Image (cartoon, rainbow, N blue to C red):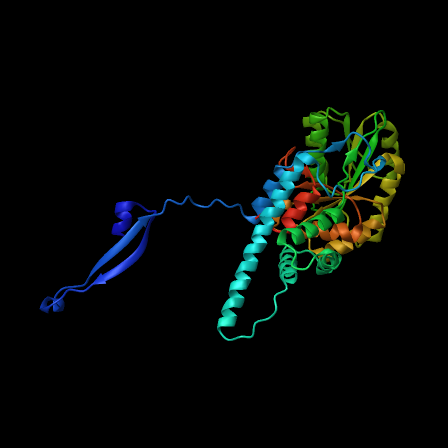
Length: 390
């Protein structure tokens, strides 16, 4: 206490020495203490939590909400090698993750050394296997399905030289993940043609808020002629919420109760650039409800529509399997993941992408409108899956 009173609350006691009195007086005197203390001048760590790191990652991503040319007209393959201006950043990402793995391997070597000193038989070292096992562990911790982890390992192992460097192994896995995630596909517009964009998915995943964010970006940032349409008449609150946003943005909102009414609305709204359509969050187990959504979607010609399946990243993967399979019977879709601010792992993005083969599009990570939405980026996801965001 005296050391802290003198040096402040950051004082650290480094040594305590007990001094016993000598001679006959030792019977009457209490021992004294010599305390060595130092002032800790190391600044406190301000590391982001895993969840904050994920949110910060997407906040820093440029908000590319719209492609001016239709994505399905582009034949670009996923970029495995980044453009020259991004190469240094990519190498730094891999280097940072490699340092983390090297550190973990160093700890493992120390443990093996202690086992040897304790008389246990030394096992031959397989550096490649040690590194791959650590990567396997990291991906599993991020809730990547083990089936897909094994696929990655099976594909990368034959390409590795004996005793490959950690950076080479990691780079190979990283590029494989980027390749499998593929190129992001977002909304697109064709000049002079209206685009009708449906948002489908379970109840409670944030479809209405996502639509509000996108409508704000398209109207305010891109100056497009936007209209809103809702078929979610099962929840009055959803209609009221969208109506409020429509009034703020000064865009029209139409409510429809059937596919017949949607066909009429389609004819009336063809003069707009983009029409964003909210649908009811139906149970994926109810076939009749799924058929109702399918009828709504088919009210618009296929070449004039986009469909986005909105999923919460916090949903259990077992449930996501059933949900995505059920909605696959309705229409081809692209994937939007919401509530990234409520998770510490991104494994479900990778799992669902590989399960469905559907293209990734947007991610949301908060309730703020028009903020807290971004285009998904394969490199950023790969970095997080491998532990580079910690």
